[in-house]
Length: 359
Ligand SMILES: *Cc1c(COP(=O)(O)O)cnc(C)c1O
Image (cartoon, rainbow, N blue to C red; front, side):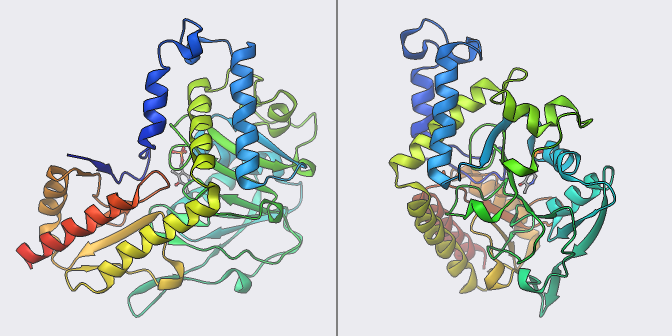
């Protein structure tokens, strides 16, 4: 039985990538040891690291005036790193709250900077929705504007960007590489790797040159963008295996048509699932159509008493990790880049059959 893993993170990786990693696990390219046993300062690893950076630059068309940093600390590390690197004395930062992760980011930032929080979630006719970026109240003098375009827990996603003179800082942990983006519109983009990039332990930050902090800034070294930039992300030992594996994922993305082709596949996957849910009386999704996530699809059974049975029968059918986040309840299908269309089709078939038997 083919299994499909709908885990929100750490998430499914492309099978062919894991098979490649398996093939070269013990003896990387005939060197007699694993890539994870090699010095990060040796020429083999440096080549792997530089190739991964170049491939990511190619995939997202990262302009030359942006640094690509391979960091530790996950998304939450960046919740601290962003204000530590970008806050300016006497200026406040704008934090847009659209769900659980952007709220957590604001709470962390409050330790390090003044900030204005604006909650943009709304609810009408039982549908969860968002205030559009064009209607956000932004302070043009803010040191930066932080937001999270895809809320992993809540299943809300937006793609428009606000017009403001302040630098945009975005947490793309659960949507990076799922579709093309215009990097030049942002000051900083960051993403923990474990959703759409590779294994946990690696965090990517794209930082526009002019936003690197001052040389003498009192920032913990493992969060200091300048220190990372000046040392090719090797001031200390980077998460080498995760970096290598991310590189294999970037090559897989390039082979399969890049982010444009990925976007088409992701849109089709999301459409397949939402359109089945919408025409069913047995299941419902409560996010306004314009803000539905392509990556994380929360849904509810009309009869919530069947939740445990749904999860366990799904598992028996090879459909893993569908239980919803504890804050939201119900179910959640995370359908990141590595989830093939067949996985979504198999889920829909299972949902149909479950509804037929239990409806
Ligand atoms: C998963 C996630 C995080 C947290 O990442 P950690 O690596 O666990 O710190 C932050 N933001 C978003 C949007 C996420 O999906």
